[in-house]
Image (cartoon, rainbow, N blue to C red; front, side, top):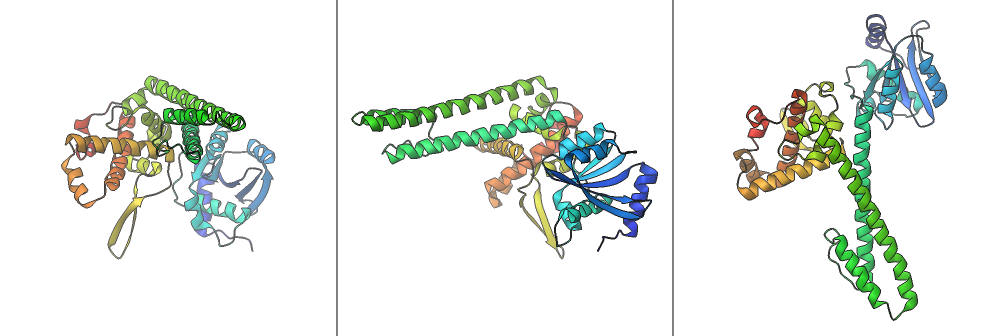
Length: 370
């Protein structure tokens, strides 16, 4: 049975076509095929068909008029949005959680494309697309996090190997590379009486040392580049004046935010980052829960570290505000840190939008942290 459109959806399509001058087209994106769904005004029919990637790009280039593409947020949504705009079209990136409300119980490409089409005709808000520069900066942070993870994995593996041979270097999370190197040197000396065992261990030691050195070099290269970029970017320098925000965090904030005008306000940017609490309730009782797992994880890590250092220094120096003191009596420390993360994200939005350095006297949010 073919899906039917409501009178509201038909009126919305007519409004886009006649008033805005664009025809809505929903696309269910996949790596090899694209499912296209749009309403044919001449035949009064909802068309839903599949195209290969090459055929789909031909379909976009041969379009007779401007189209409004609706796609679900995915890995290639930013690239596709820039591609559509370069061809004179428009694009709306819709969160997958919002599209889910328009889907049926069954699932296939046609149903997904229909759900996206219905979602883009509703009042669901779209996600702003990243520019190429900002997307590449976020890719840098992704690669950096992956290298740090591999470095930790290599240290853990080395720690375990040494422990198997009776050498304890301490907890892997605190054991420095120097202790690992010394541990391998001591183990190598203990195998002098067994030439074959010493030969095996020598290969292991070389592989571990080369891996650690290579990973450390790549991490330092990325850190230096981010520091150089942040030091030459005015927005990053302004963001770095916020208490608890360093150059790397400032670069991550700038890359995630892009043009501040894309967001309606500081609260929306904080929600986009993923540092706003989950609010649920019914019958007049509202419950504020923890922050969501969604959002920009690399930026959330940086904000968490900055908020933790900021709070620790304030408690150590006795400079924490009455707001922090009152909440530490009833809330856990990490709850306060998450609240500070939220405030830092909102302050960063205000600083970037105004194009000025941080001014404590003009910031109501920071007064609660002082």
